[in-house]
Image 1 (cartoon, rainbow over the protein chains, first blue to last red):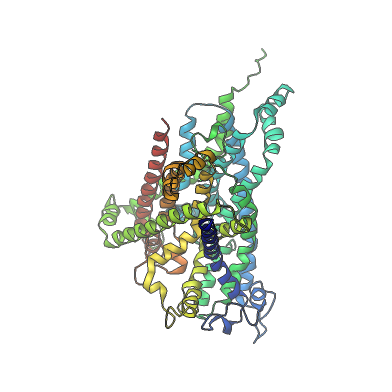
Image 2 (image 1 turned 180 degrees about the vertical axis):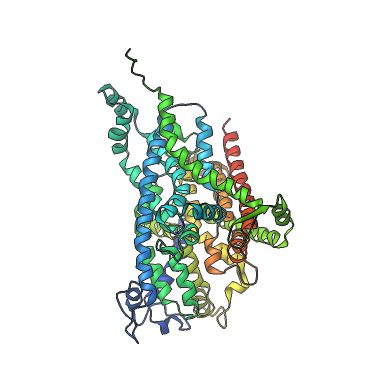
Length: 300
Length: 293
């Protein structure tokens, strides 16, 4: 029994370490966002803000003016515009990726056709192209098409990595659904496409919603295309705004405003991530190439 | 004459359904890749207009450029840190989360958290952790009396600390893969080994590990590809510094193109990086396909 006790203690100790490793960085940025400028540079660190204030959050959102001059900070408008742009870009990316991905995922899950594996693999391979490398040709193409600094331009680049993933995950869902309902639908006289839209997608709505969340998270978090294609334009999303704050604020050497901006930009992500984790933890890890015969697949 | 109403066969319908996806992907990946290849063979003026064909010049320059060699090494070092950290944290975290303990559901949410945090935000956050003026790691070490005063951590650890920041964001993905694989270890097999008196290590090696092998392969490949692709973290946290210590390949591409205005050369490096990463991914698929009988 002594060894059992020891084992318990070790497990709890390691669990605390793992939780601390995961949470400590987030805690750091949250306390900085609530501190006054002077308190952030205190040595040693104040682990609990002594005069917690929401002033920085308010300033970044343009709700509160500067304490000395009462003027609103120049970047507040930028940040709020960034939030709106991010919602538009991530929203449209999600809708298109889920729609196109469902239709294609269903085709892969239910029908056999020539070169199916080749199509599947090349679709997934196309996800691995690095944004750092793709940004230059995109910028060049977009200059001619006048898509630099526009929502559609950025959305298209996000689709380039969102679509393959949406297709693969949805294919796993559809392959997992029982065939009987679909057969019954066909017998009742529905066409193959009506079966998809009237039976399969409603049945898979949990999965479709999770994929939607995943797509939204991916697009909301994307930095490099957003920076190269929209920085300084009317369409710029939150990540480039935050990166600009980094350079605006390095002169200040006190981190509250950037921390506040980061925390605000994280709220939707953390919220969606927590919902999404229930779905990820249910995934069974199986070989993606056999996945289509009826298992959920890992997202890759 | 009335034509008989033609219906699509199943496979025609399927092809019809994947057409939108194929068009999107071709336009969004093949076309830009081809553009990168074409750009890499051109010379550009400062207005970003092509002014002549230069053949393989850019490629010769890239393959003999010491800055590129340096950046490749830094990228590989970064990738090494990330892969090792992802595997260790992944297996360790998964074994731990697979145990029964109080508060497990809360801990699971906490463990997911870093994955939901975007790479650029991870960079901002770790900037705060590592800062020599107000960094919380300095604060922690200082209060535990391990250091006499705040240290410039990033100057001491550069690419390793950058890699650790990226691993913080990346490890949950590895944990999920290993956790998912652990669910498939048959309970009785494990119990039998215990009854037979196998030590904890032996049980892990002979019973559990075979089930983790596939997840390990996925994590190894995904982590290497994603670490080679990573850019935000270096860009925001270190801008390639101190000196050139964190100038990874992706950052080198950015620098050549946007800071030095070398459009053709930047495209050359882009194309080489695409080839490298596509080759890595292709190896992944070959290994996975080969594995099945």
